[in-house]
Image 1 (cartoon, rainbow, N blue to C red):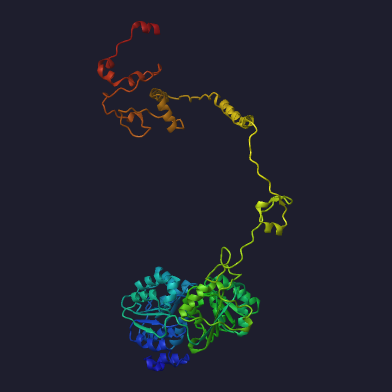
Image 2 (image 1 turned 60 degrees about the vertical axis):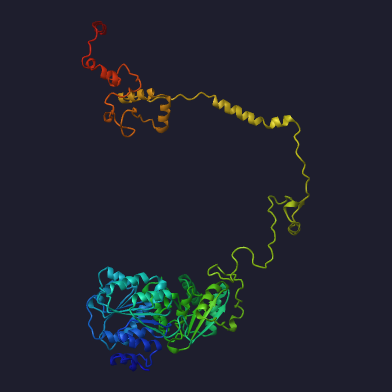
Length: 594
């Protein structure tokens, strides 16, 4: 079957022919007619089989008959990485060069102003990463209620990178009546749940088994020690005469280290990982595509969707943590039916990760047979001197204790405090003492201790008696007198009189709860009040002056109002007339006062 049999327009067919494609791949052959019908598609195909053209080519024909509006794209394509989004935009430019369609690319690391200007002019196709798309939406620079086609590419990679919540929010902003195209290289249970949430009565297209490597890729495995991995990589590159290869590392730090090591030994290499600025990542990828550099040392940021022609080799310097990443990594070679080579370096501590990859492939990876590696290859399950503990598997070196079957460790002799000091024979084994040439002292018989007389026991107890006498002398010391603070006003004097009347027990209680010496008011039991420092004029007598009399108060002679103020309530109530009209003092007293 040719592209002409798929129902494409003449302009699109001409652009595909100019790109050098005459026969569609299996995923393109099945997906393009269904997309042109307007149905939702769930496409599952291994990487490198032409999934990008399977949705870009029919989208160009569908969008050719409409017109775009400012800030309202007509279609939306979401990609997990910037490199994949940029590659999809290149496909639209290549296949849609004979159609008057506008396209905008929204990715991080680029200028906001340039992207906003493109949206203001109106775009037919919007290609974006989830983060930058939501940034522009929150700024009010884009509206998604006019998008008729939604494409989610590499959905499994979005799940691994944590983009699914952002994708769910983006989908909620789109109109309900739309066409959704859902493509992924693998399809597990979680991805299928997402597909059921986003798609409506989709046509499922699966051209190859899930998580299968292309049959055109030759695979090989070399088991070496950790300290020999770089040397093994250099020998592979020289023995196979590799001139165009991806070299994948698990960590970004290892990418920089390996890149500098290859440059040191004269290899033409560039590096790319997620922590680099976008401009530098674009420059490194452009050099590799233009054959200015033979080796691209990268992380998994380059494992998805990158289409570089004539890549002959892919080398996994590290066994991937996720088994599915192995399928995507080796998919950078052997594309479009060409023969490719995929090699992997593993250590004895990577048995667990290696088993997961082989379980996903449903077959073991054959060993890489190169004469130059004969002295570096180790048997699986052997000890790894350079293992740092990462990815420890069943063949790794034990972390604690001695290995199974190993000889017991020799007992160490105790350290001597002095160079010529002798050690008792019971403190060290005979074999160890003979080997260390340590002088051994003859054993001494232990004699039972018997006190000579009762007087010796009394002498030993003498210090206890002296200590008791010392304590007695300290206890006989007279206590230090306590100075009383002078009273400054009548209120403090009245509070002191109240405290003395309450007795010694109440004073001790007040000292315990009032260490700073702040005077408190004495509140009788027949008085309702609040707080421990209630002013006297706010106190209320619930008995109306008929309650029980308070304790007898001591009255100073210089306080004229104290007799009337502290008189008993019963006494005041029984003689009201005497209080109102007091009797005059005797004349003799007045004469005496004069």
